[in-house]
Image (tube, rainbow, N blue to C red; front, side, top):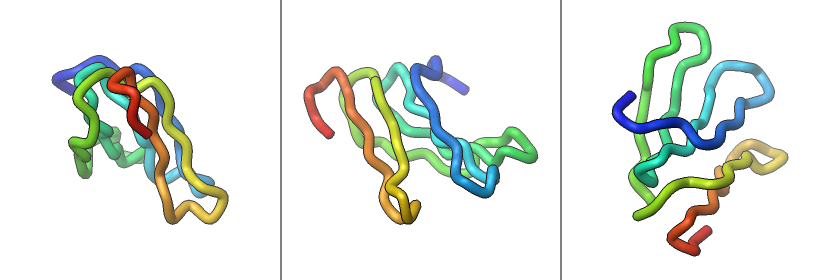
Length: 68
């Protein structure tokens, strides 16, 4: 991982970890292998919070760039 993890959440089945990173990206990590399966570049500053919706179809994140 090229940036420090600042916040994280895991899906209800324990398959995917969503990690908010220092550089503003969100890394999707396979919980079993520990390998990054996807990366979302959405923010310009540190991700400070991350949560999945109750139906797990939407991922919400907050950042020091003042966006959600």
